[in-house]
Structure formats: C-alpha cells, structure tokens
Image 1: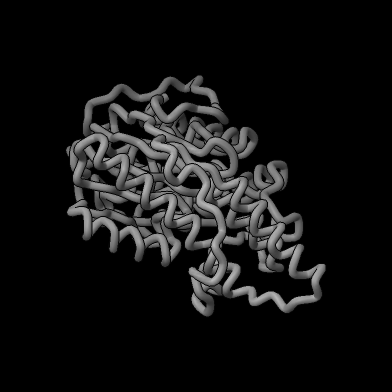
Image 2: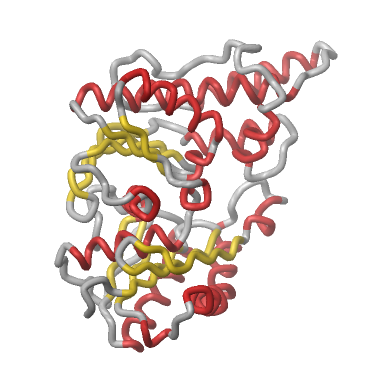
Length: 343
C-alpha cells in the first residue's frame, strides 16, 4: 500500500448514503444520496425506508464518487465503513457492501465508529487534530462531549444527553411550528427574522456542574408556550419562537463545551455533527471561544452532516497509525460505544 493510500468511505448510519474518497487528508470525492424526502411526510426517519434507499443508492453513489475523483474502483487501496452507531438495518447495508468491495478488490476493510468519524473529518479542512482536543458532537441522535487524545486510538466520553439530542429537539420544535422536516435548517433560516431574547425558554442542566445535556424539557416548554397562545387566540410570531428556542439550545451547548475545556485544561475545541451547521451555534461558539482563549475548529457545513468523507478520513488515520484491518465478519452495531473507534 502507498504511503498515503486511497481510502473509500461508506456511510449509511441513517438516511443518507455517503461515499467519500481521500488520499491521506486530501479530499478527492464526497457524494451523497439522501432519502430525506421519502421520510418528510412521516416527520422523521423510517428505518425500513432508509435501508431500502441505501440498497438502491449504493452502487450509483460509489460510481459518482469514482467519477468525481477521476479514479477506477481498482485504484482503491482500502475500504472504511460506518459499523455503528446508527439504525441497524441501514448499517447492515453499508457494512455488507463494504465487505463485498473489500473481498472483491482484495483490499483491507476498516469498520469505524460514526461519532469518531465526525471528529476526524475536520482534518480535511483544518489539518491534523491537536492532541488532545475537546470535541462536541451535536446531531439528530447525539449530543456528546468527548476528550480526544488521538482520534485513531482513544476517545473518552465526558458527557452526553440524558434524553433528547439537540437535533431531535430541533425536529420536534419545527413540527410544532409547522416547519418542514428536517427541522434544523428551517429553524435556523426562520430564526434569522426573530429575536433570541423574545421568549425566556428554559436552559436544561445549564448550571448543574455536569457535562451532560437535556433538551426534552425545552422542547416541551416550547410546545406548551405555543399551545397556550393558540388557545388564547393570539398570533404566534414564529421567527421569535424559533430564535428563542435556538438561543436556548446553543447557549447550553457552548457553555458546556467551554466548561469541558476548562475542566480538562484543553485549549482546542472542535464542533461536529449535523447541528454544527447551525449558523447561530457557530457564531456564539466563536464569540465565547475568543473570549476564553480557546481555539475553535468547525468543518464547513457540508462536512458536518453525515457523509462518506468523514468515514474515509478516519479509515485513513487508522491505516497511518498502523492499526490492523477489521475481519470480514465484523457486525453492524447500532449501539457501538464511542470508546470503540475501530471494530
């Protein structure tokens, strides 16, 4: 294998079939086939629908990635795939495809952790990760704070959500406000016309001294506030509700992230996951990091949401670290712990 091998990454943990190709930390291709429109009428991701969509999209999405990179399938040196966490059926499609390509091409297979991949992908934009760094991952399924001494070898959990993840709360509040699924981008857009201080929504676990999160109470508070105004026949200014809800979420997220940095003496913070694309989170995190003397790293929005490039990047890191490939009988583990970077 070359010093900087060509790694193809396969991501199928939820509703997007992501294929990425990297050489080292150089991105050559990043193609995505999303099934979000098929789930929109249900107001959330339907696992069976997602699995079928991955089956249909896998081969053409890989072909698009190869065309984008100007490569042939036989040029690939290694295959990386999300082995977990995620939706069991969706993961199975990706893992089965990765095994087939690995066996057919005679190249090594690396099963990787979806959350660790969200950390690794920042290297495509900002270079090698500081060792250690604090990573905050915020998405539809996860809100986690991690200490990352070495993303290819060790990730230490510091805190996580005790109920709804931040992205899940965005989706549910969007539904209350009559906004489309997925809710995050639409709340971010609508909030631009509102005031984040218009409504004093609660900040769950803000000052409890832990590094855990809770967004279920906030989601419920928004729903009750809207219901009360509707019963009273009042006009609801959706931008103010969206902006005030969003402000409550990002206030807690950034507060806890900087608390983790202080407690562990770390001066580098990385934010990843789909919610990291939120414009207010990025702005407030930068403002608070600047004030605290913490260096902030956030990938561009297209690398925050689920994608194959992040899987390929972590696979490349594993190859560079000399870590042995995965066996061909690796399982798809829907509850794979973050402490297991490589299966």
